[in-house]
Image (cartoon, rainbow, N blue to C red; front, side):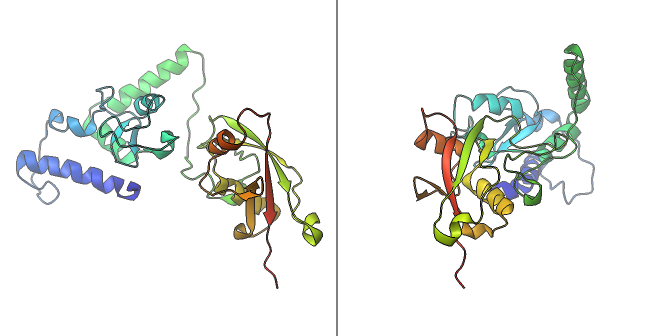
Length: 260
C-alpha cells in the first residue's frame, strides 16, 4: 500500500514532466516558467471521461487517479484498475479508493475557472430540483478513530460526514457466551445491531469493547463457536455464513479476562 506517498508521487510526476519539457528543475530554478496545460494533460485528465479531474480519487493499490464519479461507476462492473488492470480488491474495490485532495488542488490551480464552473453546476443542480445543498465541513477518514463517539449502531451526528452513511446495512444479534461466574458479566443491554455491510469485525470488536468497558484484546467475536478474523467484512460474513437465511445474523461474543 502506497497511500502515504501519494502527495509526493504526484508532485514528482509534475516536476519530472516540467524537467522533460523545459530541461530544467522548476523547484530549484527561480526563473518564471510558463507551461501549456496540454503538456500536463496526461497527469490531470481522467482516463474514463477525458475531462479534468473532479473530486480526484486515487486507487491506493496503483496510485492511478480518476474523477470520483467515473471510477465509482466503473467499479460497479469491474474490480480492476482501468489503466493498469491491477486487481483493486477481491470483493469490494471501493474500499481501496481515496480522495486525492492534493491532486484536486493542483488541477483547480492549473485550469482557469474549473472550480468556479463546477461550483456553479452543483448550485444549478440543487436549485433545479428544489433541494437544499448541505456542505460537509469535515471528513472522517477512519470511522473508528474516536471510539468514545461510537454507538453499537455505528451512528454519528448528521452534521458530520460519515464513511458508511450511504451503505447497505446488515442486522446482527450479539449473544453472550460463557459459563459459571462469567455468564452474568459483560452483558449488552442492546444486543441487536445494524451496521454497514462494509464494516469489519475489528470495527465491531472495538465498539463492543467500548460499550462493555472491556480491554479490546479480550473481546472476541465468533460464529458457530469459531473465531472471526478482524479483516472480515459484514458482507463477506453474511454471504459465507448466512446467505438465504432470515435476519438478523446471529453472532456470539465473549470476554476472556486475564487470570490473576
